[in-house]
Length: 230
Image (cartoon, rainbow, N blue to C red; front, side, top):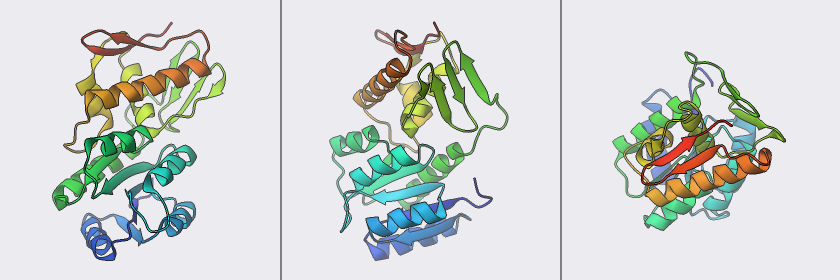
């Protein structure tokens, strides 16, 4: 991560974007704002920001599709989506396709700063912990944010990766949905249980495909999920 974190803002509301640029600038972060998805694509490729604040409704692109594509291309990128559409299912969709967090407009500026601060903090590698979690047939590199299994590299979204790390740090111990939500979500927004279930289901499927015949995550009825090295 850069000495000064770089945040990219992609929103066609120029007045709101300017306000957020000033808000983030006061936190000591480098900030770059663009008004279209196309400019966001170019800025992402050229500047390699640590995190992106991405609006769902853009004049030239669908924010959900951008989120899906950027998450696949940049697994370690922090992605916070925001939109005037505050329906819970819109939030579920945003989180399912790879967003780290989701904030509805209008928002409280202090909450936006708190969520972005938490997201940037999680982008920094853990320097005080072991750099590698290794199991028979599965390895998690905490510095490179890479996961490898029997069939090679496992492509995970940022949320899926953080779920796996939270579970793998406590092998054999059941973690509740609330604990898993806390491990992967910034700020005060707590997703519905269904969101955690969907993300865990996607994680299990990818791990199953990467290591055929193995089930790394079990469901604990009435409690949550447990990582079980086999």
